[in-house]
Structure formats: C-alpha cells, structure tokens
Amino acid sequence: MSGPAQPARDSNGAAPRPLDGITVVSLEHAIAAPFCTRQLADMGARVIKVERPGVGDFARGYDERVKGLASHFVWTNRSKESLTLDLKQPQAAEILGQLLDRADVLVQNLAPGAAARLGLSFDALREKNPRLIVCDISGYGEGGSYQDKKAYDLLIQSESGFLSVTGTPDTPAKAGCSISDIAAGMYAYSGILSALLLRGRTGLGSRIDVSMLESMVEWMGFPMYYAFEGAPPPPRAGASHATIYPYGPFPVGDGSEVMLGLQNEREWAAFCEVVLQQSDVAADSRFNSNSQRVANKEALRVLIVTTFASLSRAQVIERLEAASIANASVNTMIDVWNHPQLAERKRWRQIDSAAGPLPALMPPASNSAFQARMDKIPALGENSASILASLGYSEEQIRSLAQQGVI
Image (cartoon, rainbow, N blue to C red; front, side, top):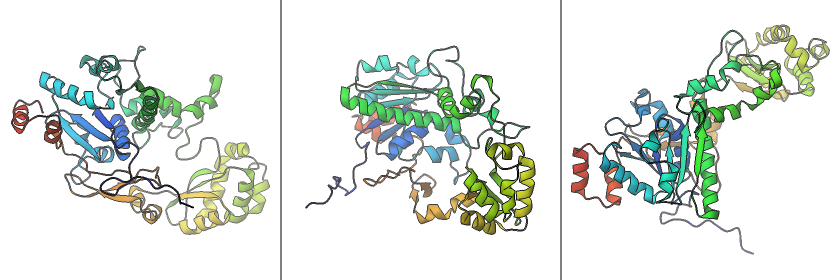
C-alpha cells in the first residue's frame, strides 16, 4: 500500500508554494497595502513594489530603529522587488503598462482618486488584461461623502469608535500597533486570495474595494452589539476586560504584573480555593456571579492585590496553573523577542537587508506542505534594472531612463 502523495518539488528541491507563479504589482506606501502584499510574497507571489525615484515609500523614513532601517518598513516589505518609476513621465507609464499586461494582481493605496487619474482603474485595465485582479485600499471606500477624505491609522481608530471603548475611564487610548492598517491589509489579502480562486473558475479578474473604516467597524462588532439600540457601551477598562472580572493585570510582590482571566463560576471557585486560598470568598454575595464581581470590582481587586503582594510572579503563576486559571506574563518587547515558546518552536528566521541579516518571525499560519518565503527587504530601486531587462530593455536604455529620472 502506497503512502500519502508527496508534493512536487522545484529544481532546487523546495516544495511549491500556493502563490508561486503569481505576479503582483503594487503601488503602495505606509502599512495597509505593504502588509497585504507581504503576506502574498510569503506565500510565493512575486511582488513588484513600485516606488518614487529618490524617495520611495515614505514608510522608509519613519525611523531608523533597525540598524538604520525603518521598523515599519522592515516588518512589511520582505521578499519584494523594488522598482522606481516616476509615474508622471510617459515612459514610466509605459513601463507600468507592460508590467500590468503580464501581472495577475494590482494592489494600490494611493491617495483617493490618484489611481484612476493614472488610468489604473479596474474598468480601464480589464480591457487589456481581463484576468487582472485589482485591489483598491482606501480610508473610506469608493462612493459616499467620505470618499475623498484623508485617512491614516489613528484617524480610523477614532472614526470607527475603537478609541471610545479603549483606554481608561478618564482617557481614551489608541492601540499600540497600526490596527486599522492591519485590518484593511488582512481583508485585502483574503480578498485577493478569494479573487484568485474565483478567477480559477471564471477565467476573469475582479475588483476588490477595501475600506479601512469598514475593516475596523467589522472588528468592532462586539462593542457595537453590546451597545445595541442605544444601550450603554462597554466601559473603558484599561488593560482589564470591560465586562468580565477578574480579567486583567494584577501587581505582585516582586514588582511585576500577572495577567489572568476567569470565564465561569467553576473557575471562580477554583481561583478562591487554590489561588487566593480563601474558599469562603467564592460564596460571598458580592462576588458570587460575574455581574456581582463587575459591580464590586474595587473591593475584589483589593482582596486579590493584597494576596498577591506576598508572592512573586512565579509563585502566582504556579497557583494559577494549579487551579487551571488562564494566565500570562505582562511582557515587554524585550520579553517577546526572547519568548521561550517562540524559540522552542523555532519561529525565528534570518532575512537579508541592506543593513545585513535581520531576525523575522515566520508567518503564523504554518503549512505542512511548504515553507513560507522569507527573502530580502529590497533597497530603494534595487531591482529596477533587472525588471526592465526582463521587459526587453537594453542596458543603454536603462541607463538613459535613470539619467532622465524615469526610474
């Protein structure tokens, strides 16, 4: 009896990736579109990142925290090729047109209306390449009175209501990462995958319209329904859960903090018996249901903090584990870089860059059939000559285009 079929391998002995052979052209900057296309590159797609000559994606200049490179850029741009084009020049538009004739996907998050003015709308492009998939990422989507409004991550966090439920009772707070950009980028990524599947059935490309606002409002589903028909919204509760208690960070005797969370009455009883070592508290009428614990959280917090004050973080976690209570360390960025679970699961790889080798986390969705692509972060215009050569341009023509500032 034969064993399971093994995947075919390429000439280098590597198993094929799902997007091998797919070419993506991206007019991208900041985070939302680059984050989307990096996922596509992880899965094997060839991503050609079109950037302005001399300047490039403005995210290249956000900071110099990674050996002189920008932290946002390092995160979202590995495994891509950088082509510089001044799209205001006719020769650049011609080059871009040649690329799009051969491409499978166009991704863009230019300013509202800019892609259409460049002749890059889905309707204009599909006449020459009916298989082309076009993904437009914008702040508010096409149509509506907000269509041309500028949108950045923090502005969308505010517009979507995220800030209204995040922070402390006194002060709203933004997310510590680019959550609106990430949401839009991931919907663009999944939308492109869906469009590729659809094209496999119909033979035709399609347009994907991704709105940052709508991406974030989708993620706001719980607080929105919690506040259904004018009901009070979830209160801002800092790092604690807004509607479940105890569920949040608590200080311990060694000066650190422990995050813990209870979900039901069985866990509450175990928490009192094993962690607090005060079984009688479980039946206290102030705390004998989640709604009562939320209503009397200040009194319960005093009781918990008093108990933890004589214990180290390791001792508290030991008790929580013994009681099968979910818990976590309140880690810093240094703690995460050195997290034992990531090391034990061998989740770090080295990628190349203009600044030398850099660590990079493997994509979270591991697949047993292939290894994700994790190649170099391109320098600005690093691949311009090779891309143009693949289109048939001679060395002399490429030098001339560089001299004219086209590339």
